[in-house]
Length: 282
Image (spheres, rainbow, N blue to C red):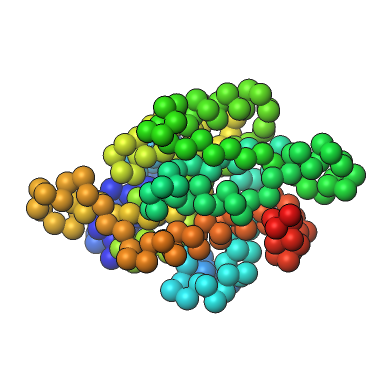
């Protein structure tokens, strides 16, 4: 059930705007649905200013992959499909990439980015030490900027400084999102090529991470973990409160692992899950 509340997912925004009317498309918006190895995928393309006004998001491509209830039994297949979608959204991947694991590790619904960091392959130092042995790997770097409340510095400022120092050609930002579908909390993943505004889903937007702020392309990957409680009732006491699944701890850890593994597969083609686990254990 999609609720007409705050959401970061372009697929949900499109469904909200179309509503129960006969309208299936919006001006400046193109969408398609497909099924990849049993996983429903919705691609929403915001083509121009009309589409930006219709959905309230910047022009670009937004891909949402839905995860089935028993996705844990099909982890390898889910990771393979998600890696394919990451590559599809990113286009031609460059040689040096900065991975930005956003969020607050001390608040579970906001910890997806932080937790994904432990599942990401970082290869910059390995390639510098032994270029021949790691020639088939992309050069990846990782930063965990935390949140303004604990660091005192905007994530965008930290990442911008690191970009000046390391000169990546692409930033991949991982963060938690807000959703409007109770059934899709921690059961969908959105990839977009327009960047991200940390905290915007819960009404606490910080400086955006995008081409304008960083001077280079930004791919964003996120999972909806919370729903605005005010959308469920007219009770004013619910304003500023958010709903999250009862099993949020295990769900967030699973989604963080799925994103990390999928990114590794997308960025380092030819790497198997077994090889990846060996490298991550070192």
